[in-house]
Image 1 (tube, one colour):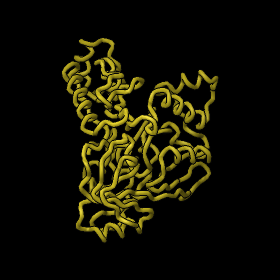
Image 2 (cartoon, one colour):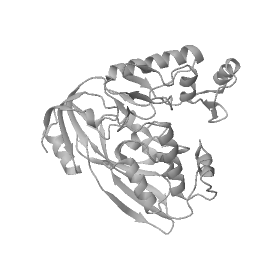
Image 3 (spheres, helix red, strand yellow):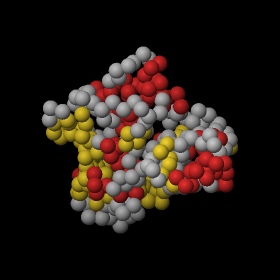
Image 4 (tube, helix red, strand yellow):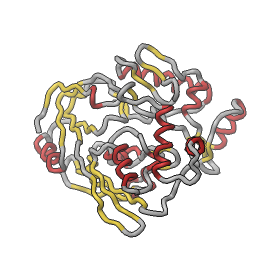
Length: 337
């Protein structure tokens, strides 16, 4: 474990933003992580996972600890279920495919989401009607101050829509080192009702889909709409889909009768942020090397040499326009650093 100085983070964030870390170290085990924390207890620290859910707008004047702990194991299993523990440094999509290869169901709708396993509970990631909380059992985390290990169960994580305890009370206090999921071994709960999954399956003449069929459909849909971060810098969905009160929604609908929406409850309605952004005329626009993707208005992109500040400036312009036009506030889903 060698601490490197003035280290470029361009390859460590999916936006491909050029920013530097004052100090940088990668850890490959919990013991290494604890050792780094003990030996650098007085230093300001920044924890880095897969770099998929952040926008770097400046250099990081801290010790950046890259959590690169690998490993997947079966913790326990019954005839119907299996408990899988994956270490934080595992690539999320590769982990999903590993489970599908073993016929373990529950994560297939979240195929091709960028990032690593360790950051999935922080954001309670989700896609196509499924969220992490649906299969999450617990996660192991190290206390940054005391180096003690703690297990957070599902209830303690306080999951919400793209929310968890790790974005609030536990923020900057713990480093997640592994996550355990409860998945099905048979009688899989196939979820094809959300988005375009059913259309994609019908296109391929699949009437009784397997979990692999669902995964393949999700991958095809995402690849048709979302740019590959290796080819075009991005962080997936930049904004959360706003959830507003039904009263608020009715006022919006009175002015914009064709507004897309999904009922969350009798009192709340979700409005797709991508639809709002597209209707406001931002889809496909480019300002220098910062832009909005041509196929998916929810995704901001770096065409090559955009700075984090330029992408942030574009995002704020979008937020202001949506608020002025629709009286709806949209929040960034990515962490702005």
